[in-house]
Picture 1 (cartoon, one colour):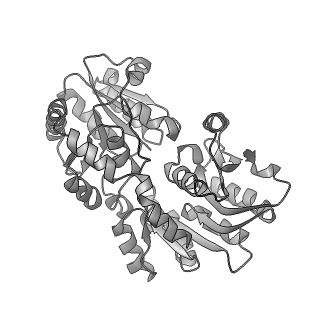
Picture 2 (cartoon, one colour):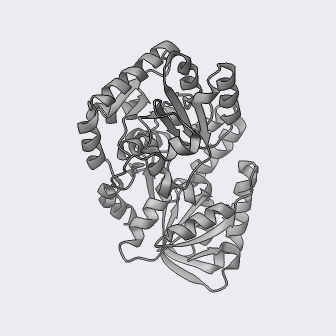
Length: 385
């Protein structure tokens, strides 16, 4: 069932109620967790934002859990979206009860306490970012201070905390003195994705061109601009960015200034259920992250694993948690965040040659079979309590 939160009339009980202040159709972590919980014969619902197009996509996918949605207002500031989320959720608070409340980001933690009315109800906080040092707030200290204060207040009130990587957990233990969190990594479901020509056909990419793909938010520190700068040093290489964000316009302008607009393609985000079917078209997946904040320094993003699940090697920066994974399974290469444009172009060309020679194939297969969502069911069971 997919229903507007404001249309809920009768009281509903769920074994698990997941809340996230984001567009759930693009939220791999929430979708994967809700799906896993629903597979164990427990009732599951998600409260989240959607757009009109998201609704169409979700109804087409027919998820095995209920979704109660709030309409996403385009171009609204994050603060306004958060206030609207809490307002709508507050009005619906009497309509839900649950044995387990999952705050799938920091912004939804207050709502879980609004809904919780019994001491037996457990709250699980998904600290999917180092919220006290977010990349998007690198130059907004006041906003960052408010977000950090919210976490400081609530993190001692929840029953369990989940993080995406060990270093994130170590930081929270040192910062707040909490128990060691569970590590629930951002991993995709185990699947075999076959390459196709969807990207080439839709974006008019020549057959002779090799494709670098980037998926996710597009803003400063994510390496899209860096690869655009490297394109003049590369022959027959096209960069495709699938996503949205404040950096899109700058990237388009940069490509124009460098006369490589024909080799930089931008595509709006696609639903998570379809994403890797597009990614599998590419030759290399880009996971270039600059350590502008602690959250970015400790990054272990889902795209790192999704590229490999889609069957393509990954070009990442040598940040500690990503480097550890690629040392274990060399399904790609790492570079320094400060690498020169010329050296970056050299590393890309070297990766393309290695891919053509099949040098990454064994490691992609091994990493895919090791790092996948279903392998984390023991962690989810521990979080459930």
